[in-house]
Image (cartoon, rainbow, N blue to C red; front, top):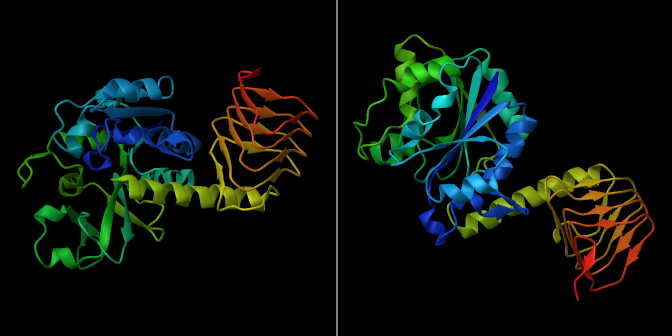
Length: 334
């Protein structure tokens, strides 16, 4: 069984918003939904999202896509994972993912599941120029991961370490819940850190590994609106590049915004300043003109739209929609 736990309980104070941080959108999709989407592509069969601030909103946005567990009060990352009680006793592997890290590829989660077959715990790390306030990866003389030290608990020597924790892990599920029982809150923040599981599991003779990614942008978390825009740009480039390599003619990839659930047929042209979000299905030989926004819309073969806004609708084969049309549910909005 491949399980996953998505950490989505925080408010996101630096967003300066009443909306829970994980519901802020990238490429037309809430960040938490993006993570769930990628985990499913990686093979996750059971996903539990840990909610907290604004949990009703998060649960509504992800309804039908995963299970939920409420963390209240919020006493750290280890405490958050403890709330996924429905997974206790399950066999198999469990990936722990951050709900505010939307750039992680399905391939990366799949790699973690593969590594997890030969370990009780594995942590995804990255080497950065400026380690800032991230938890440092401390290795022993043989290069094995010894522990992760949170920045606020680092000594001066540990602060110089550039290999940092991404907050993304894979566990043997039984080892995870065994280790959680031994977590303590004897740290500067009086919280239960999931990172302490490295020392706990090593102490039990368990196998702990690390896998390092060289793509810092992929694992960049989002804490404010500037970082949200950066994450959106990273995803925009990745999605557009993949479609162009598959034959889609995107005239200006810098101004074309395409969501992860959009699909294209052959010989499609996407002109500048366009937005395609939700579950759009674009057929073959279609043209999407400049200043067009499509959401949850089907364009059948040979259809054309230009400077339109169309939502929850179908553009029939060979049909051309005149500029400045606004259509919702196949009804023209005047």
